[in-house]
Picture 1: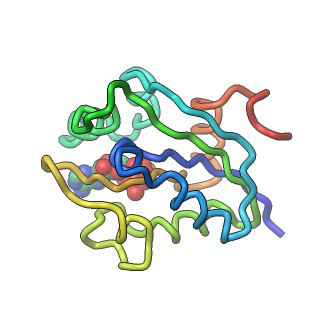
Picture 2: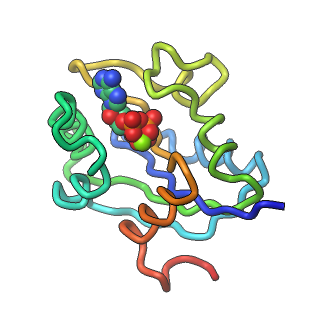
Length: 150
Ligand SMILES: Nc1ncnc2c1ncn2[C@@H]1O[C@H](COP(=O)(O)OP(=O)(O)OP(=O)(O)O)[C@@H](O)[C@H]1O
Ligand SMILES: [Mg+2]
């Protein structure tokens, strides 16, 4: 049995559409445990660190604007962040998300159902860590140790 943790971010497009509950219920249906939960008003600094792998890429600016909620009508930069835990959690959650590009994501996946491309940016509803190593790095970035169940 491979117990893993993974970081989930409900992105501003999904928050504006009030999809957090629906998205979480899909992860709960997979038997995953919520080990951490918080609302974060994300700063550009935090998001640049989170997307360090995109440094130098032509779409980083668009991704930052999107993640800062600049295409939304909400008054702040809120993101709903969760640590989920369970067997093989990283790969299972990524499978539930579908492809990065919502127009290519399978229709039964979260991004296939709730994502779209707008303002030239993939508004793909949910982030999830890509590997267990990425998950540890990202959980440390978004959560303090005492905010995650042991
Ligand atoms: N080819 C691309 N064209 C435009 N935007 C892209 C492209 N690839 C990635 N992005 C944007 O950068 C973000 C991060 O890319 P990454 O390769 O980490 O994909 P991901 O792991 O599926 O998504 P995320 O990390 O946001 O959950 C994507 O969510 C998307 O908004
Ligand atoms: Mg990624």
